[in-house]
Image (cartoon, rainbow, N blue to C red; front, side, top):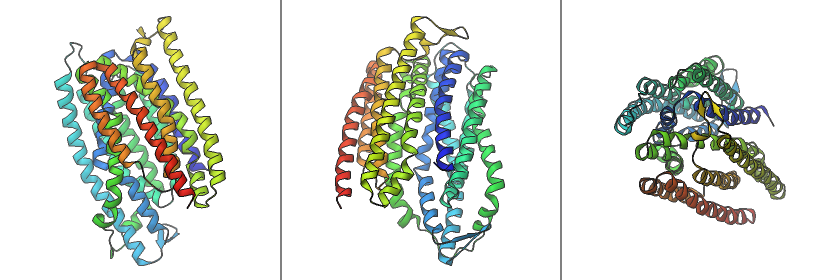
Length: 440
């Protein structure tokens, strides 16, 4: 495990464990209504996927392609003028484009949030949400502007440096949220962390990357990268999967907020936070093996590849299921013994048993599905686009219709059934593509 993998896995691990701490603190220091706002904030902010549409990852790939033809000498790159020009153009393109997108993101998200919460919030409990929402959206827009810089630098080969920054951001922002909740800042506890996270990146990048980026930015542009003919053919496929992912994972809270109120939306948000923490933690077993698996595929060493993947998959599945069982047992204990924290019953902050079990079941299935999808994508192929489109559309229909008719029970049951069917489809693609590619 090199430092890049170590920093990445450490950030995931801290995010997972930190999510558990955050769940306890949110339950202790926020009311049920405030908890609903807290988690629905995140779901609405996720609409930034519609603005980026996978462009960050594409920038990394294109920069890496041009970088492969150049040699780094101090704070400059030397080599063929064509590749230097295209590298410089990519930096100009992504910086200008993301500034425009960030402004659009800020205005759109701000308006959507104010409209949504003003229309659907009908509780008599007063909640100070407007200023926290403005600060949160502003911090999100700031971090959005920084996406092309981190993507560009990663493409230059500075992977471990960017991973280290993200680890620092993860640790600092989690700690700030905890301190804010304990100090009684309520929804303000998470409102300023985006701004702090952006400042952490700027301070570090200013010291480590600015001289190099400045040199690249001032390269004379003689040849450009065509967005229409080179970038867009890649982006539209990736953007479809990104948008589908939003409709799969981010609609639950807003729909429940609108149909059943902030308290139920908060229960869903709390449950999803705990389950996502488990998912992120156990997926690190697979994600840290991606570089090794990619190398084995390049070498066509499929025997070692399958041995490694099989062992890792079994380990991650065992840990995933065991952790889910432990989580479920913990909720039973909290409710059986009426355990309180900060004068509030912790068990009441999560979904009822049946919906919670259905959501936990989807986490176990997705652990397998995400793992085999990672295995397939290590072959530099994306065969899951139509699966993502179908799953996204089905989830929108299921969440909106069943949520309106049957509430949280309808949403969780519909999602569980769709996840089972999706898992079968993902496995079928995995088996077929593996047989095709490995027999070539």
